[in-house]
Amino acid sequence: MNPDIAQAAPSLISEKLVTIAADGSASLEGGRCRACSALSFPRAQVCTECLSTEIEGVTLSSEGRLYSFSVVHQAPKGWKVPYALGYVDLPEGIRVLGHIDAPPDTIVIDQLVKLSLGVVATDASGADQSTYTFVPA
Image 1: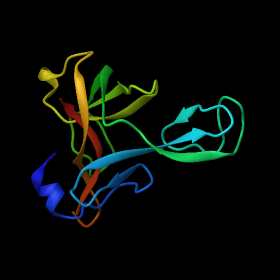
Image 2 (image 1 turned 180 degrees about the vertical axis):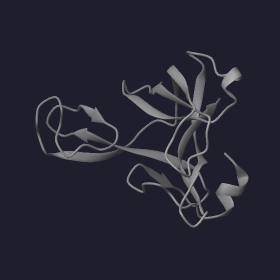
Image 3 (image 1 turned 45 degrees about the horizontal axis):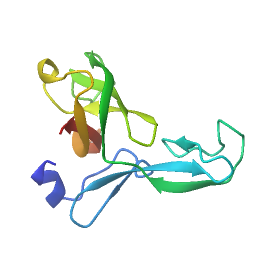
């Protein structure tokens, strides 16, 4: 994890997606259906498997394998480009989309990645905007 982010309280793009512990480590916050145990990320309001609305919060694994990625060259104003965006398969059997915080020429399909926090954009005032990212493990 970037030590500068761990020391400062980052301005998160969405506080519903990630929780930051006192030590600065990040956790993905998903959902688990109480009726059928299906997982979701982000946490769903309604289960896509059985349509139950009984969705409880669950902390997801912080490591996974990169399934696929693409390098993005155009983004909304304030977003840093180019950036790598990829799907990460977590051990729970759920696939998560997120920024891959590594030079694109070093990213390899099926590599082990771990959860981190990263600055991905700036807001209208120029303040950094952070979210969860994945970095090579």
